[in-house]
Image 1 (cartoon, one colour):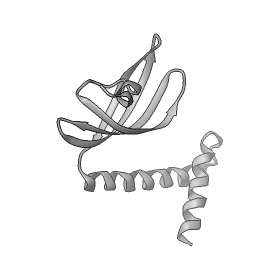
Image 2 (cartoon, one colour; image 1 turned 90 degrees about the vertical axis):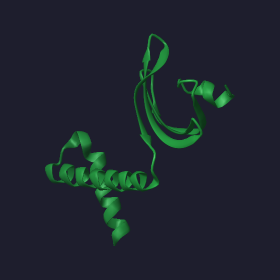
Image 3 (cartoon, helix red, strand yellow; image 1 turned 60 degrees about the vertical axis):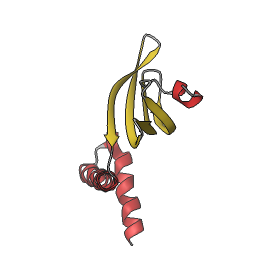
Length: 110
């Protein structure tokens, strides 16, 4: 097992090529990794949970196809903007950071 594989708590069959953390705190860790499994490359989204000092996979999601991956990215962008619009309309203070995304998206379009 190479050094980068030791950094992520994944199965030995998974060869991690690179990864980037989305967030990490004492209990939760989310990262996106490019991995090779049985000769095939994939993008994987991992969520780990720290249980008694040991990171364990709570959830993982694979992106196997470039078309599906690109569509997922676009749908996520649309969902975040829609959430921002809803938050802005309701002036929901807890989620106002999403409302800023609407302003940013409107600036890019204009």
